[in-house]
Length: 274
Ligand SMILES: Nc1ncnc2c1ncn2[C@@H]1O[C@H](COP(=O)(O)OP(=O)(O)OP(=O)(O)O)[C@@H](O)[C@H]1O
Ligand SMILES: [Mg+2]
Image (cartoon, rainbow, N blue to C red; front, side, top):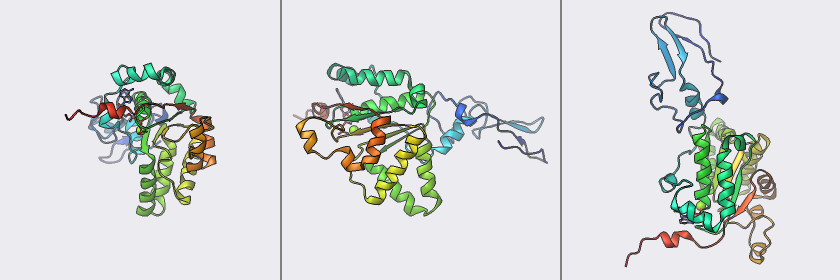
């Protein structure tokens, strides 16, 4: 709560809206124009007559967006048009009905799912729709006014490294804090790269932080289902081998795994050049 006494030329500022009650009907933007046309884009409505400033309706969403500003929270072009009515998802619903149903149910109750810290994990072959379904969840969360961060695992490792190098102290801790704080973390290609011991510890701190705070994680991975019973699965390296048993254990509780195996859909999407 910020408050200042009136002084010459300076408006009084009162911040009254709790951040957590912020709801936006579009992707939050820290610096964009006021979606309600009520302030000049700084989050304060100034009354010239009384020389006071009161928080604009858009201020909570600006603050929430500010907190997650350094995080990636946009849906990439390839997945932007995807909805439950898209032909791709309808097609997937014929080959993996239980999985699409589970995602639909999650999206329909996205606020309570996120409040409970529930997530989902998609395991399977390349090109089977895992990331597509994960983005359906992230979009539902964004539409419900929740803060979302989306990272592929290799990019997350690179971002952790960069932040650490950039600013030895604060920047690094602040980055991990923001990743822990965001309402939903979508981690794509989990375990696609083998993290160093140091990076593994950072991933543990991140997932453990979210686990303790009951914050949702949605992930995708090509690695086999935990405890998968197929012969190949038992011969392959598991998620637990790759990211560590303590991380995999927490994820298995908060992000129940869904299998998505089968034909690579990318091969049929490739343009016919002949
Ligand atoms: N059942 C489907 N029918 C048609 N197109 C699909 C289907 N499933 C996925 N796609 C499309 O195939 C492409 C690959 O899907 P997606 O990125 O979700 O795969 P993935 O399982 O995440 O693969 P990877 O493990 O390689 O990351 C996307 O363009 C997606 O829209
Ligand atoms: Mg993917």
